Image 1 (cartoon, rainbow, N blue to C red):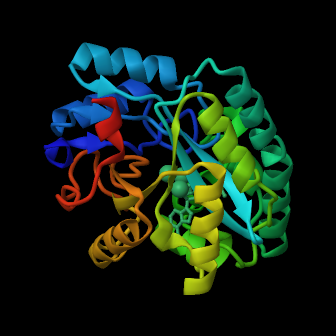
Image 2 (tube, protein in one colour; image 1 turned 60 degrees about the vertical axis):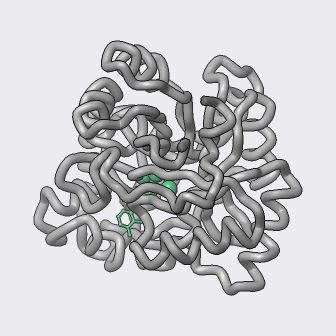
Length: 280
Ligand code: AMP
Ligand code: MN
Ligand code: MN
Ligand code: MN
C-alpha cells in the first residue's frame, strides 16, 4: 500500500533556508521512521549529493528534489520538482536564472527595514545564511527574532516580511511553464507545493491548476506541514476533482520552528495515488 509508506518529500537544509545541514536533516528523518525521503531546497541543488549519500547510509530510499519559486498572476507559488536529475543542464541553467536577483532584493529588504527604524538587517540576515546565493526572507526573520525585534518567525512575516507587508520587496520569480519544463526535462515530476497557502479565488485556482496541468504538472501536496489539518481534506478533494497525484512532506526548516518534524504528519488518504507510487 504505497500511501502507508512513511514518505517525506519536502524538507529544507542550509543549502537554502533550513537551519540543519543535509546529512543532519537525513538523520532526523531516519530517526522518525522515514522510508522514502527528499531534500527540496529552494531553487538549489547543492545539497543533493550529501542528502543522497546520507539517506543511503541510513537505509532510506532517496528521491532528488527541488522547490522552485514561481510568479503566477502576480503572486508567488512554489513548484516542487521530484525525482529530478541533479546533473541536468536544463534544470541547473534554469535554477541559476532563478537564484539571480536574490541578493539585490535582500539589500532592498534591508533598506526598507532601515527606513522602518530596524538597522543592520542585511548584514544580520547574511550571518544566518548557509548558501550566499540563497538569501531569503526566512534569514531576515531569524535575525529579527534573535535581535528581539519580534517574538517569533510568524510575527516577523505577519508584521514586516509577508506578502504585501512593509518590508516585503516584490520579486519576479520564474514562470510557471518554465519551472515545470525544467523539472520535466530533467526526468522529474512537478508538484504544486502547499496549495492551501495561496490566496486565490476558486476561479483563479481553476485557471492555475489548468495551466499547471497543460505545462505537464501532475501532482499537488495534500498533507504538508504548511497546511492545517482541515486543508488536508480540502486538497485531497482537489486532487480527486482534478485527478492529480498526491504528495506528502513536512516542509521542515529546522528544529523548534513552526512546521512539522520530518515524517510525523498523517498518511495520505488511501484512495489517492501517491506521486511516489510510479518510482517504487
Ligand atoms: P523568499 O523565498 O525569500 O521569498 O522566502 C520565502 C520563505 O519564507 C518560505 O520558503 C518560507 O520558508 C518562509 N515563509 C514565508 N511565509 C512565512 C510565514 N508566514 N511564516 C514563516 N515562514 C514563512
Ligand atoms: Mn522556506
Ligand atoms: Mn514553499
Ligand atoms: Mn518548502
